[in-house]
Length: 436
Length: 155
Image 1 (cartoon, rainbow over the protein chains, first blue to last red):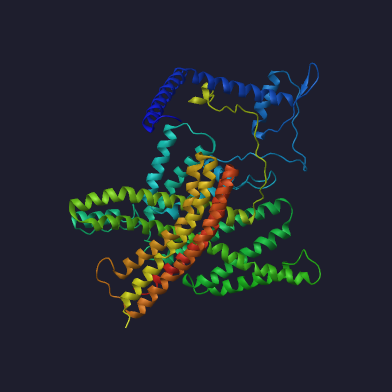
Image 2 (cartoon, rainbow over the protein chains, first blue to last red):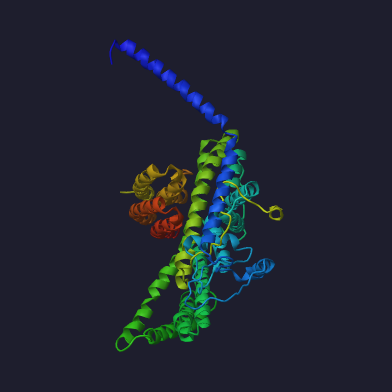
């Protein structure tokens, strides 16, 4: 570089200006090409379709004039596919899979549970010879989610948001299922919120107190967990036992189907007896005086059976240690059941955080000032509270399914059934009769 | 002589310390998240979700502090806690504080690993979330014990 600093600075500035002009020109050039954008996207998708078709074709066994095609199909689609094959005059044959074959899996559920397939898919698809529990756990999922979010206001906002998004955007696949699932969970939350008398925490009470200086009391339909958390704790654990017993029921079904009656009895039915007995022994006294006695007998009977049958697959001394091991499993059961205490803890968390938000608003002042503060702080505070609690409810409702429920019976490892389809990137192809 | 009010407030202050765990945990997850983001900035939303998971311990601590404030009448200005009740309230602050601190750190590490999983295999993200949520169970137990002590302290 030569010359004075001033000259150099001037030169550099000119250079920068030139470059900026050039950039603008290039940007304009690109902008002029914008109309071709759509066309390029269509072209890319068309090429993708062509490529995929060729790729499938290359897997055919062919001679000069014939080709053979082999693939999986869901039973439900058999008629339709047979129709198509008839139409083109093909020779075809359907056969059920061999015992050894690794069959790809497609989940098939009733309409209510369809969105909950997302939860199953996130875990891992069930094995082809396993059991798809989506229909069964979907009800528990929604109820547990609602119990953990436990505020009618939040539930309604969640429901409304999902409903609007689903109405406005044509979502597909996983995203669609998740939104639809949260819509249902929002309704379940409204249900629990009304039972517990929680509408954006204690917003109405706080509003009446700070703005009008009056005291109102919104009665919960059932009871307020903040007043009596121990009661909700007991119910949470009871819901947990029902959930776990359902899972065990599935395990029995699977074992009976495979002819393993002894295993079904020793691994599951005995636990039914033990847990029911222990439950009655501890808590039956509040219902009737005779129950703890019956419970005691049942629990001891169950434990003895466990001790005797736990080592049935072992030999020699390990028959005894196996029995002890089976009895020791009771610690696993206790931790499984206690795990449902999160239903109470997360439910309370929502209620308390919501009240804190309202309290912060009420601290600013009374009358009009208080009203403004309640609304302003309320919008941000409740949005934050809702976000954090929806995340918590989603994560922990899933966990209860994955760890506690699936842990009892689930056989995962199914390969997803992914038939040849139009896998386009930009353009969505819709059949005319599918649009309506 | 220590008054019951002072003991109760000490309990509230201890409960709020659960935030230490969240602070550290969210920090650990955040470091990893920034690293993953360097590869693919589109993952910001998803990493943020995982980073938020260790934040709950702090919220539980805050929750417990406010529960103590409300129960002891700290906000309404007529706080009158006997020395025995004061000790109860002090005890109620300890479980969530201690468990919150360590489970927050642990959850932060699990969340960080989940974020790395997200970086390599985005389709497996849900499992990363569940791993981190496994840790939170113990914070929830801590909160539960804290709440049970407070609500049975005859305030």
